[in-house]
Image (cartoon, rainbow over all chains, first blue to last red; front, side):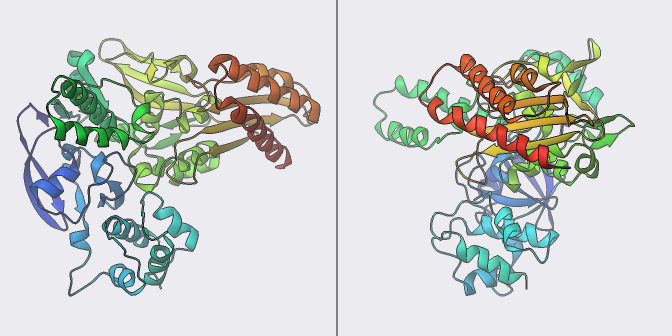
Length: 157
Length: 325
């Protein structure tokens, strides 16, 4: 796959659906999710891999969408917050975040949920240290993390 | 980001061909955890220059000031002026990934991620030092993308895995289209901060590490401003072997993030080599190590803090290793 300065077609699977997007080589996965596909649940924060607001699951692993060049996502399977649950059919983690008051301003929440989901996919019964470690790449400036940790723990039971 | 052309290599040969024709202006990308912020920073310095010549753009400069202030502690450490014309993706080259072993050597593919290192049965069994170092990097998202090869070739002063590879006397296997394959000890590759002696047309194809003789112990510790997602203020990798009579027959000390270029503390090692680990000798070794470090860096505002801390970390790791039986 060689790409000149102009745009090229990127193919991948997002939330189980095959998609094709025309992208520039300089664009990141975050940019195409938000600006091209209008999947704005994935948040843009620091854009240098520090805050985790843009966390998505790529081929089963939590990654910062701001640190993946769009063209590196060729043929990958991406799961975003839009694929986790729907208002009528919440993912257990989403229900637990609401029940346990784990959301304040909400900006970190999609990233927290994706990191939590990546953890539970691999480890359905994590202990508190495993939960803390799993969300250690996600910053929250409101909650102090306690209720988020609680919510992930309760969702796993 | 400023424009570049992108190529995803389908094989090593394809990657080497691509690089051979574009060596000067090409950057190799794997996990992107260092390169992508550096490309953004290059943009930032570009817009700063542009902004200066456009004094009337008040709203623009206000926004810019905010961005620069929000740069935190990562942006200042990035190398300046990363403006590649070409970016070569090596993540899809299957043979560059994974950990294998022979009777006496462990081979780590350069695009093996920190998470894969932590999960590697071979590394957990043969080289636990690398597992400890890898697990100290960033958070899960960074460990899922960042690679051992990137940690070495970036040669950042604050690298976490590089000091461990140095302590394990790792060798780099490099390939280029022009010169074929060569082996370079990692210690000889590190030239200056963010700079190595790896040629622009070379791709790192493997990190080769000899298995440690039975009974060899190793320890790692990292000190950051918080527990997770932190840039090392300091880290340390130590490898130790005792003879049957308790004499130190091998000792390698590599402090990280305290010098511009990571290196072994051979003077401090020699104090203890061939001797029994008596408290006074350990003290002498720790003192000499701190002196060697600050001879290189000069006295700074942080020296008063770092000097006792680097000594204490060394003594703590050594004490732990001497207790392990």
